[in-house]
Amino acid sequence: MAISQEISYRLERLILDGGLAPEQKIPSERQLATRLGVSRAVIREALHELQGRGVIETRHGKGSFVASMVPGASELGEQSPLMHLFEGHPRTLFDLLEVREQLEGQAAYLAALRATRLDRHRITKAFRALEDTDPLRNARLDHGFHLAIVEASHNPVLVHVLNSLKNMMLLTVQASVANLNPREEMRKKIVRQHRQLYEAVIAGKPANAQKVAMAHVRFVSEAMRDMEKDGGKLIRLPIEQDKANDHLRAEA
Amino acid sequence: MAISQEISYRLERLILDGGLAPEQKIPSERQLATRLGVSRAVIREALHELQGRGVIETRHGKGSFVASMVPGASELGEQSPLMHLFEGHPRTLFDLLEVREQLEGQAAYLAALRATRLDRHRITKAFRALEDTDPLRNARLDHGFHLAIVEASHNPVLVHVLNSLKNMMLLTVQASVANLNPREEMRKKIVRQHRQLYEAVIAGKPANAQKVAMAHVRFVSEAMRDMEKDGGKLIRLPIEQDKANDHLRAEA
DNA sequence: TTCAAAAACTGGTCAGACCAGTGCTCACCG
DNA sequence: CGGTGAGCACTGGTCTGACCAGTTTTTGAA
Image 1 (cartoon, rainbow over the protein chains, first blue to last red):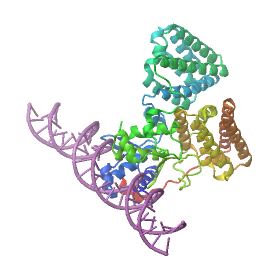
Image 2: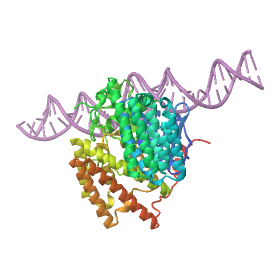
Image 3: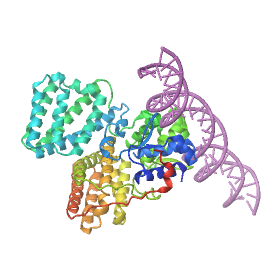
Image 4: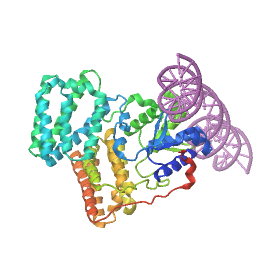
C-alpha cells in the first residue's frame, strides 16, 4: 500500500469518526509532512484523494478544511463537480437539457397533483406577470414561472436539482435564451406552451402537465440546437468522441 | 481553478463520456505531463483525485486504468462501507427516490437507444455477475449493473446527478438492496425486474426499458416505505475514536 | 492612532533525482 | 534447441528544494 493512501485513509477515518469537526481546519501541508515524516508531495496526494471523495475542501492561501457533510449546499450546488464538465463544450448543454426535460416534466406532473391553494395562487401570479410584460425582458419572469411550478411539486430534492441545473445553464448560455424570444414565431409558440402548462397544472391534470412541460423544454432545446447550427458551430452527436482530447488516450 | 483539478475534470469527462473504456489503460504519468505541458506532480495529484472518486485504479509498475465499476476485476479488498452513519429524515429519502425513479427511467431509455457494442458487453457482464452471485452479498453488483446502464446513456450530466443522488441516499440509509433482498419473495421480484430491464436495454427498446426501470425504483421505494412502517430504523454504526491519530489534529 | 507596506503564513507548481515494482529481450548455458 | 536469468526499459512512488500565488498578520512610518 502506498504511503499517500495510508495517510489519506488515516485522515479520512479521523474525520469521519468525528475527531475533526466539519469546517475545522486541517494542519498545513508542511506541518503534516513534518509530523508524519513524509514529503509534502505525499501529503498533497493524500489530500487530493480526500478531496476527490468530498471529505475535505482546499482553499488557496487559507488551508484545507473538513467538508460539511450536509449534502445540501455543496453536493449539487454551484461548486459541484458538474460545473467543471463544461469547459465550454456545447455538448454538455444539451446533456443538461436532456435531463431537464425529464425533471421539468416530473415537476409539472407533481405540481398538478399536489399544488395547494397557495401554490396555485403563486403560479397564477407568476403566469400573469409573464403574460403582461414586455417579452423582450422576461427572462427573469420566465424563470419565476417555472420555479413556481417546481416548488409546487413539494419535493425539495427536485427543486434543488433543477435549480442547480438551471444555474449551470445560465452561466453558459445566458444570451441564448434571450435570443430565442425575439423571433416572433418562436415567441408565440413559447407563450402558447406556457399557457398550456399553466392550465394543465391549475386544472390538476398531471399527465397533461408533464407532457406539455417536456415538450416545452424539448422545443427550447431544439431551437438552441438549430441556432448553434446556423451559427456554424457543429453539434457533436451523442456518442461521437471528442477529438480534442485524443492526445489523452493511450496508444494501442 | 487549480491546474491539477482542471486536468482531473478533463480526464473524468473523457472517461464518463465513453472516450475511455473501463479497464483501458491511461497514458503514463510522464506522458500525460509532457503532452499537457505540466509537471508530473500535477498529474499525480489529478490522478489521486480521480482515484478518490473511484474513477480510476492505479497499480505500481503497471499504470493507471479506468476503474471497472462493473464487477470482474475489482477483486481487491472490498472497501468497507464508509459512513452510512446518519439517522435519516425518511421524508428526504422518498423525495430522492421520487426523482431517481424518473432519472433511472431516462437513463434506461437512453441506454437502450445509444448503447454501443462495448456498453452492451459491459452491461451483460454486470448482469451475469448479478445473477450468478449469492444474493446476500450483491449490493455492489446491483450497483454495478445499474451504473453500467446509466453510463451507457452517454450523458455525463445524468451520470453525475444520479451518482450524487445515490450518495445522498447512502447518508440516510444503507443500500436498499442489502435490506430488501433477504426477503425471498422480494428478491425474486427484483431479479425479474433486473432481467426485464436488461433485456429491454440490450434489445434496444427504449420505451420498454424506461417503463421497467421506473417500475423497479418505484418498487424498491415502496418496499422501503413498508419497511419503515414496520418500524425498522435501519443501519447505525458505532463511532470509534482513534487516539493514535491525535497528532494529526491542528492545534486549537 | 491609522493604515499601507512588508513579512509570514497558506496552498500550487516546477524541476530533477532516485527508489521500487513489472515485463520484455536477448545472450548465455545446459 | 530450449529454457532461464540478468539486464534494461518501462511503470508508479517518494524525496528535495526551489519558486509562484493567494491570505493573514505584523510592523513601522505618517
